[in-house]
Length: 136
Image 1 (cartoon, rainbow, N blue to C red):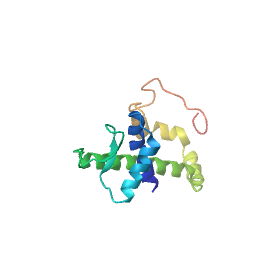
Image 2 (image 1 turned 60 degrees about the vertical axis):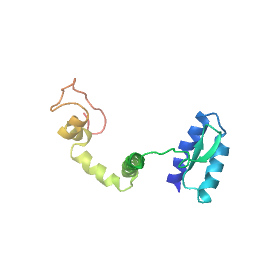
Image 3 (image 1 turned 90 degrees about the vertical axis):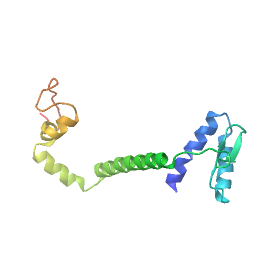
Image 4 (image 1 turned 180 degrees about the vertical axis):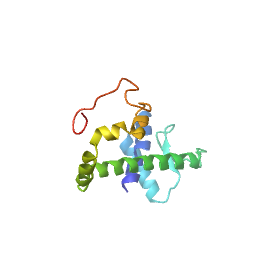
């Protein structure tokens, strides 16, 4: 339900960009969709809603499906990273990282350095010094 609510931004923005009352247009769209109108969308030419299929407004479904899948996967990744950061059990993992060299060990590893564009060894781009826990 929250995902569907988030997608309402699209007809709202189209309505506002066309100078229409977006609240009225969204209410009409919700009513049409609730009563079985599958293909209804914003009609900016007549300042109303219309059956887009009958109006010959067709869009490639594959492009929309791929866009929605990519956006939802990106949101899930962000949420999982956020959940990992907030996880109360992560304190145990943090202690083991600090004991193994902490941030400096992670920053000097080839994987993180390459991801940050630092190159293969320390000091490839001026050699940053990270201060704080375990950073020197």
